[in-house]
Image (cartoon, rainbow, N blue to C red; front, top):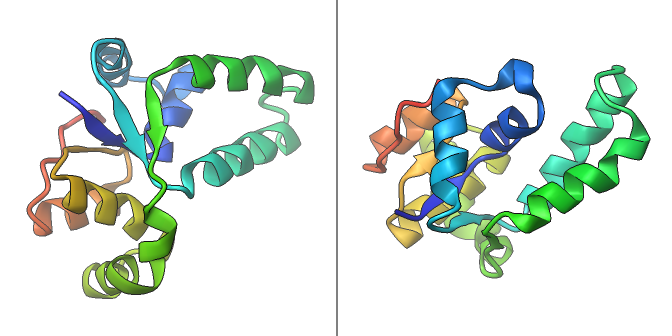
Length: 138
């Protein structure tokens, strides 16, 4: 089944010390379906790689390999999500006490009626409060 993919799970696929059996299973399941991400996801993912490089977790010359890995996965960037930032996403952020960034993922999951794959506890709680299926993957 398709799902909305949060950056936290993406990072678990890149950094093995953040992976769990459940995140690995989710990645394996992805090969038979599709994941959807808001327009923010590539920026947030790139920033996570930049921070990881600055902290010495990865080398800059690994970026192209990581990008190729992510590009090969069936992940679709939602073209509508950016336009919904000032409306539904901002309202959800306020209502659920989460960041506008996290609300982008929640808004997409609500709009598409898809489960939300996240390792972020606050986002998961907000998703459940909004009636979104949030599988246990921690």
